[in-house]
Every structure is written in C-alpha cells, then in structure tokens.
Image (cartoon, rainbow, N blue to C red):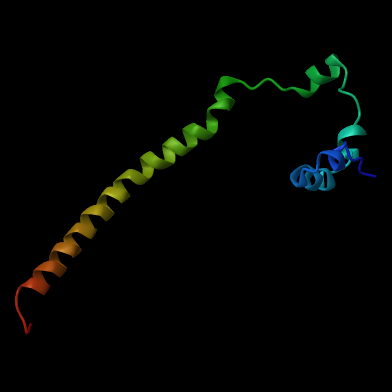
Length: 95
C-alpha cells in the first residue's frame, strides 16, 4: 500500500499527485542474491589477450582495405555517368 507523507495537510496538489504515483518496493531489487565470493568472480572473469581484443577491428580494417578499390571505381563510374547524362541533357534538343 502507498503511504502518504503528510501531503494532505499542506494542500500542495503536485505533492498529492506524486504521492499517488510513486511505486512501491520492487521485488527484483530487494530479493536478489548476494554477490558471489571473490574467487568465483575471478573465475568468471576471463582474460582477453591483445590479439583477441583487436581481432574484430583488424577484420573490419581488412574488409575496408579490400573494398577500397571497388568503392573508388564505383565513384569514377558514377562521375562518368553523371557527366555523360549532363552532356546529353545540355547538348541540345527541344526546350
């Protein structure tokens, strides 16, 4: 049950409203097990080697380096197509 903390005496409607909407105790915050023993916590923690730590970053870098020539070629092709379209559009015709 929600306990009202003297809000009726002072006549503050905001305090009355807040007293009505404040939730009660939540069981997932009060009924959780204690922290594990320090030796169990150390077993759960795994040591990551520097090579493993940066493996994903290296893989992304390799993929980017392999894709760079294709991105550059696509940019050149796009530029050529744009120039050809603009040249054809501006070369004449009925306006």
